[in-house]
Amino acid sequence: MEQYQDPLSGVFQALADPTRRAVLGRLSTGPASVSDLAEPFAMALPSFLKHIRLLEESGLIRTRKEGRVRRCEIDRRQFAAVEGWLSEQRALWEDRADRLERFVAKVQEKGEPT
Amino acid sequence: MTEAPDPERDLTLSRIIRAPRSLVWSAWADPDSFAQWWIPAPTLCKVVAMDLRPGGAFVTEMSDPGGPFVPHLSACFLDVAQGERIVFTNMLVGDFRPAERGFMTAAITFKDHAEGTEYAAHVMHRNRADREKHEEMGFLDGWGTVIAQLAALVEPRVLTNP
Image 1: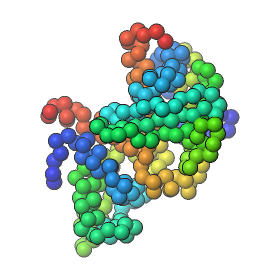
Image 2: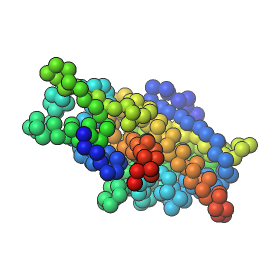
Image 3: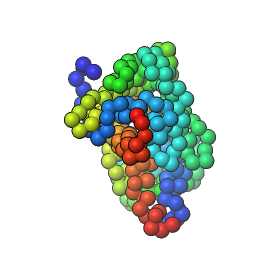
Image 4: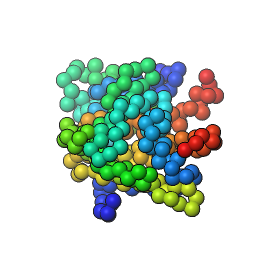
């Protein structure tokens, strides 16, 4: 597995493509085989496999071979608390509140007038 | 908001921020301040419009490091009570014009608290079909969350292994 210099750049690269985002969107509903994932896309399997490999290298998904079928799933370690859409939205708002809190604390430390 | 949250499609969060309400409010209502926390670093946020009045446009853009600014949020304020409440929806754009797509209304409230400010968000979503459509559209806002979590995950390692 290729190691990126900066782990984040691998993730940005993985997310910077509509096909890969659609694959992540599909996998967020549950594991799927590569052929099932490839079905909605008008692209040759080798090209599609490159997207899968890039997602795997970014750590966003993991794959394993089950007989002749390669199964893909979201790697929960990377996605942490993101389980389904609503909890994803919750995490988004919680993170915003965290950042607001830190921002306010920083402004207060500086003693800037409100 | 007067309507009780629907656990199937709404989310609520509330926390005490140890700072005066006026300060928390200005972190939200001042565009330069808002841009500094709305989207997680290293992605940059630009506030294109923040017209704090009912019908006022609320538009933000984001840029990944080195990349162009792209649309992030396009919304319309529904209700604004100075220092107390901000309600907006992305189902409308400025001047109440219906949006191409949208799926949520958010009510943010600021209340005095013995230890500072009680900051709360009540976010209402339309229905399950919209949630699924949103998933198909890609992670959109979820990106920010994912990146933030990943950043938190990898930053210590980046620091120790430059």
